[in-house]
Image (cartoon, rainbow, N blue to C red; front, side, top):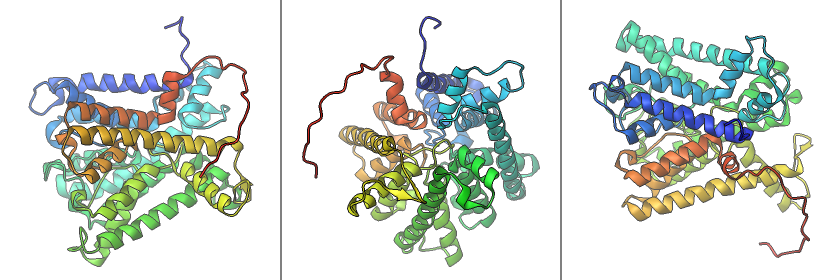
Length: 444
């Protein structure tokens, strides 16, 4: 290990893999299941990867299969996966007298997607303190409702579990005691639970860098960095637009038997949660084809860079869309909020989208070739896995071994970052200083 110097991306990828394997071992133990029996390796591995990659897809119901010990293991994996192990490691290092060397600062910067390596101790403290505050407030609000239904101790535990799961955009829930795999369908009309979870998902999904900007500049929006402006603007458009389209598409379908207020609440919740959280208050197996495509798009976009969310990220899609508009208008460089993008930004954005779509296409084609599922169900499942969302139409438990391994791979690649994952494997130490001659080709 000392002879081989791992790159920053390789360390991050290896760290997530080690966390997932450690979780697998713990979940396999008899103490982790309610029956006191060993849980099969693949089931434990699938659950551990899903938790550490904050996805939420499951093969067994979290409430009915796992014991209290198993659920706590899952909760710890969610927290580690959501914040990133480097953020937590840097936080604890900040209490020692040892200085954090440049290498560790670079790894920390890579893990939260920032180019700035100064002040890593302060950033890690703010991340963990902010997380504790938001999750704590969320836990208190959720406990108010859950104590009424489950009693004091269990209600508080449920409040903590679902607050952490929502903030980390994981989507794991403990509502299976009412009905296995039902998620939050029974709470579709509960204003407190819906709004609290939506707030936690949104705050966790906008990213730590945006937190910093908001804390520093308060309500002075003009002083925000371009990254923060794009994240907030794109997030608002996707949330409102997604909720409106969901309401229109499902008004006479899955929402047909609800009252007006409940329809609006369910539409907003579905728009927010499909951006990588994975909870649901509507039965997704009954969605119409148009809604399924809408949800796939929202899942594909995901949240913000440097956050607990997955997907290709809001800024990635914004850069591509703005460049499209700029090209149609005949402008050389796209401009937004009085700023233009750096030259490599568009190249990176296109690379991320194309690479993710390529993995999705391969996965969908492979699973459809092996198993007889509806194409829309497979698309929904694979977009959910790749974007670490965790929503499903119900086919997860019917996947064969190879299909499960494909989903596991996509969840892991989605959390590490598909491009980061590829670079971690293919990265070379030295790039030859060769610039080949250019030649024009016809495009379009």
